[in-house]
Length: 175
Length: 235
Ligand SMILES: Nc1ncnc2c1ncn2[C@@H]1O[C@H](COP(=O)(O)OP(=O)(O)OP(=O)(O)O)[C@@H](O)[C@H]1O
Ligand SMILES: [Mg+2]
Image 1 (cartoon, chains in turn blue, cyan):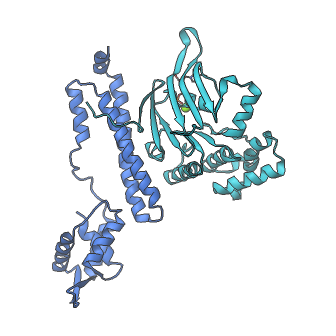
Image 2 (cartoon, rainbow over the protein chains, first blue to last red):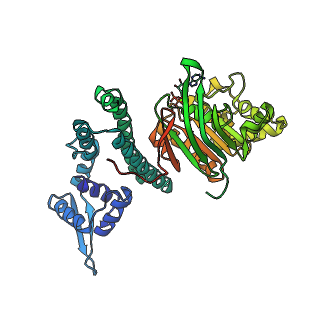
């Protein structure tokens, strides 16, 4: 998970309190990745252990300002320059559902159609959120990413429909 | 909706050709688009999207069923009146753009205004105003083959926007544009909608359809589904 590196990136802009880091993390990711304050402090203490950040003195309210170290900057730069691996994605329920529907010789067309309408609604919501956040480039890019993913799902559904329409199995259940 | 739609298609059928070659491009399609509404039409190639758009704009007449634009049923009109109604109320962006290569960008945009009897000076002022709106003021006096594909696309959109036409029909207006430029086009159509135009947009791209208030899915000439009706649960 990239919380570590995300916090380092925010700290590269200047020293921050834990609660500030949490708020800025959420703003930059368009609130798509909510963090709780516990996660923030756990991560900060590990970063401190690894000498990537250094804490300042506690103020009278007991708050601590964190500053990025040289090693921390190097770690952040390493992160930016390393491509993300196409990691083991969590299994996608929709893919399993369609595969099972085909295996069970059910009529997959209504499954595809209902999903396409639902995914289009999601896309409409994302697009509305994007229009509302037109001035925030970080959030816009996060929303764009979700839009591209939903769009890929839509294309895949069109593809499934075309493949199934041409398959002998469908033609036999339709007659 | 309590007010009249800008365009209404009621149980529209369109058969191309006759005898054994006849193709039912649309079968019993009903669709209203209200002022301020952006409706996207999606569907596989050959599903009837362009046919639907041509009927909605009075460029083609249905085999059966009715089309009403701004309260006027098209069947009752003489050819000249139909042409006048189209020029006054309807703006088109065609799938293949249809810009006239021997006219500059500004002249292409002026053309529908001049056909409407507007004087050249005024028509040019109107044209420059919309070209500015689509971000093309600086290429107004260039010819279509002297500007980029994306700029040509925006000239075609400017031509559809010029004047006070309340019905905009756009067939794949984002063509081969990159995605931020495509977003700009949708932003433009959306802005027109927000000041009271009715927009019917055909697109293959879900990301652009998602700008619409309502998305209609066509299959084999019929409306297969729409985001306006409550979601039926998958079986
Ligand atoms: N003038 C015509 N004469 C005969 N058939 C036609 C004519 N125009 C369209 N068709 C047929 O009507 C059907 C619908 O065509 P239409 O152009 O509306 O499809 P479309 O959904 O716009 O497709 P595309 O995504 O490829 O543009 C197709 O089968 C097409 O071959
Ligand atoms: Mg077409």
